[in-house]
Amino acid sequence: MAENLSATSAEAERSSTRRLATRARLLEAATVEIAERGYHATSIEHIAERAGFTRGAFYSNFDSKEQLFAEALDDCRRVLLDDLAVQLAATSLPIETPDSIDPVGVQTAVEHILRGLPKDVTWYVLNVEADLLAARDPAFAAMTRESASSFLDDLGRLVERTVGEYGLRFTIESGQVIRVLFGYFSTALREAVLEGRADEIWLSDAQQASTVTRLLIAMVEPR
Image 1 (tube, rainbow, N blue to C red):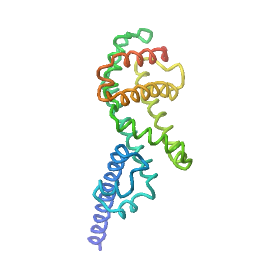
Image 2 (image 1 turned 180 degrees about the horizontal axis):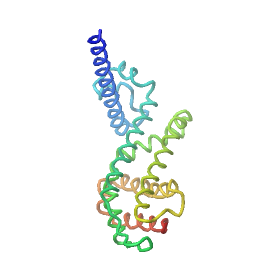
Image 3 (image 1 turned 90 degrees about the vertical axis):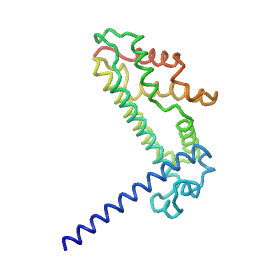
Image 4 (image 1 turned 90 degrees about the horizontal axis):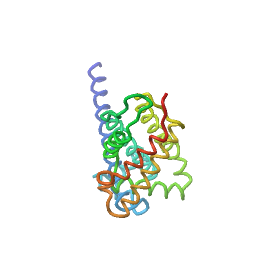
């Protein structure tokens, strides 16, 4: 009896692991296909074929292409948050006292952080596709609105904690700070992608880092 229960439990665990692996491959395939073809030109068959599965496997894991796309966007955002957390943990802001900030040193830190942010066409295209779909499809907009807002709020809290470790605080709500900084980042990335220099955007253009530094310093004060 106990052996049967153990075998059943082990099989259930293996089945769950396979299901998670299948979902992960479908999400990865959707990210690549949508970035390459565009959302509307990408079919469920395209996604399933790239992932190495059948259409049936798709519907065993997702109710619709919209649901899959929404989850793929969430995965990309989680990766960005994780990568930024690593970058922030490895970066020291050159602040001797809470009311003494070295702009040159801060810019060096900002340049280091920016190198860890996404700078390829995939990130840009996925967000453009999501914005266009949300603008045309109220159901998709409702499906992704809370997640997109939570992502920016989580990003704001992450940066706010880092700033607080140096005896500083934002002069406005952290979520709004991030919307300012992320808005600038998104615009700069858009320009770089359309000019064919996305791979170089944060590696060679110190002006970008200088602007972000000035924005950041303007929005902090001693605690």
